[in-house]
Amino acid sequence: MKKISYFIIFLVILAVSCLKLTELNPKLLPLIDGEQERLTYKNKDVYAQIKVAGTNINYPIVQHPSDDSYYLRHDVNQSETIYGAIFTEKMNRKDFKDLVTIVYGHSTNDGSMFGSLERFADSAFFQKNKSIEIDSKDETITYDIFSAYSYTDDHLFQTFDLGNLLAVPNYFETIKQISENLTGNYRDIGYTPTDRLLILSTCDTKDNGRRFIVHAKETNRIKVNQDTRTH
Image (cartoon, rainbow, N blue to C red; front, side, top):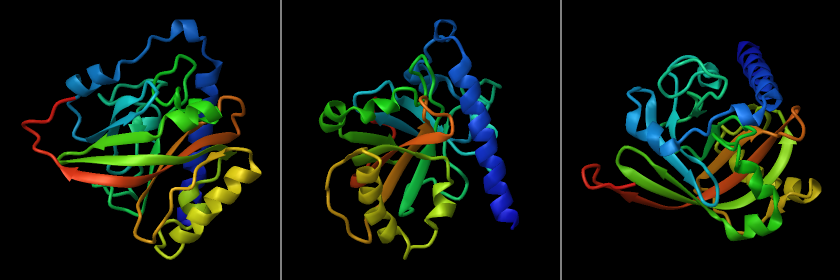
């Protein structure tokens, strides 16, 4: 019961934050430069960098050690802001070796943070732009995008029991069905029970009671020498 209550509180804060963002005048919102953030952050909660093909997304990923809702209203430098930061919940490992990792970010009218993620609702854009790259401390991980659609604001981990290894293959099959039922975008890329999934989740700007969800499958993981890495 306590765990369920926590998820409800998290979703309420998430929904309120989304509503405030969509009410802002986009002309008053400066575009946040992800590369500049990467170069200037000094926050130990930062543990990776995410880049999504065809979008403005190039940001650090953070994870708060105790409060999953903290980065809904704080940036990577821990300054309070309605933009928040790109983050994962503490239920996910920081090495992206869980079978399912969910990354959250606000959708903004100026296109910053996950504001450009909804471009994947367009079929032509979806077919052209297929890759996500995550740089962790010592690895570069590549993912292929295979699904994008608007969904309810349910907490996916709880709703589909994604912490249960046996439930993940069933969820993968559900993705195709949901994509078709909700007229989302989907491509068949194959799946095995050991495949790792990445989910990007943001507010649906057309309906604040829903989330826009992008699914991707890990396709490559290479060790990288941090001293020689370039961005």
